[in-house]
Length: 284
Length: 293
Image 1 (spheres, rainbow over the protein chains, first blue to last red):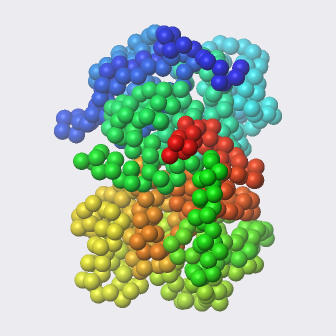
Image 2: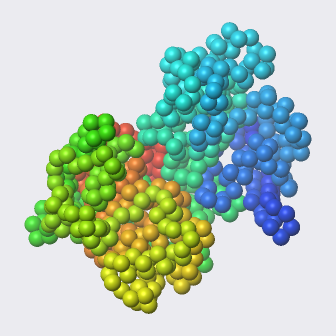
Image 3: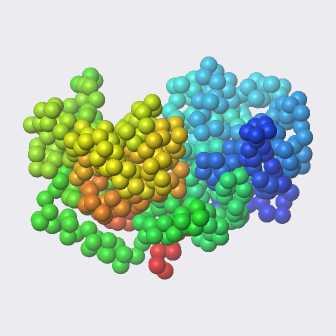
């Protein structure tokens, strides 16, 4: 049960495997490349932190894995199935199976404001033909897992606090027992207590073999929750490695700037001159 | 982490704290803020002193009263809100005695501020440089041409790479970080002694946030500006501040030298903020490195 236990070995068949991914937006002259040969894998039970700032391509990466953007080259393999050439109909089938789930920064976007929490949670199961009592039982179990009281089941999303809503969104994403969960800034809009709670819950999921992709602009906010970190910069993964290595011995110039820019409690203003030097080098 | 560095940090903060030679440029004494609409007290007593070249940080969630406290020191509390007890002294003047006109004179020239969303403080249909020049003409009485030259200097002072180009640009042509620099340039245009930065870097990318925080540190060193840095993130405050106040639900739950608060947090809420960084932030990896440094 402990989140710190060693989990799935990296030799396991990856749940997500992205290879040589190119994505372009726009046509002819306005054509711009958002991803350049992106290659990443996520093993079962592994949490990959994908860190990137504005324009890094992190959202394009998520949208491509979810089938919302079609890559111009490369492949996306989810749980052994190559989905890069999928038609919208095949994507819909894949989504209905709930193999991949997604949690947004703002849970109001992923929860229907007119559905009670119970209906929101059970809906994905009911469309799969699960009987209502069984669906309701699983909804209650999941609510417990995200540490919410059962009496929230009858409420509407608007009646919940932001932190509660985000936990409901995580519960809803988990109800189809996905192999891969993609979370885009899941904790950024929350206060400190709720941020910690969400990250604690995500940590516990690793024991179940769910693969997590934690996307954020802020290295500091997810560093401790990720096993490995991929740093995206201008559409390229400039550095991928175990979290501790990326943070303690960053190799790429941009990663070094990112690490020395992230506010921390213990290094304080020490790295100001280092940052200035790195900026000068990076922009040269 | 180490006792040595703790003591060094404490020793560093002590002389200025105790220093009778430098009178505070901003003195907030047990300020209470009351909401007349709901007839409730929202801020229950905030006190701090700020001397030139120093920085005080206020940390708290939304609703903790940190922004209301800032607004009170700027004399811009929203309707219905009033300072119901305590005093705020700016440069020796009790602000309770100020008329509207005197407040207007004080703002910009003695105390100034930048907030979270820079674009909402700039006119989208005017060139940004002209907006800084306008501040200079109104606040310092400079002529049109002088104001332009001074505005260009200010754009350079906030490390914008091509001041001439930026001067003639509109808000939509600039990134969030550039806009915040423009706002800082406007805020320091009339040479204030106090600058309040209320979540000024919250909406920015981390590398850009660091650039803005470094800029504030530069300005503090080069001009003796006194800073109030307000953030929901304890680590942001730790970058710049000598002293930190932790606020929660209108209450100051902890107040002390930054190093002391970080190393030996006493209130459970402060401990929660520290724990978050130590379990999920970079501090989880970086903390041991400090001993080596």
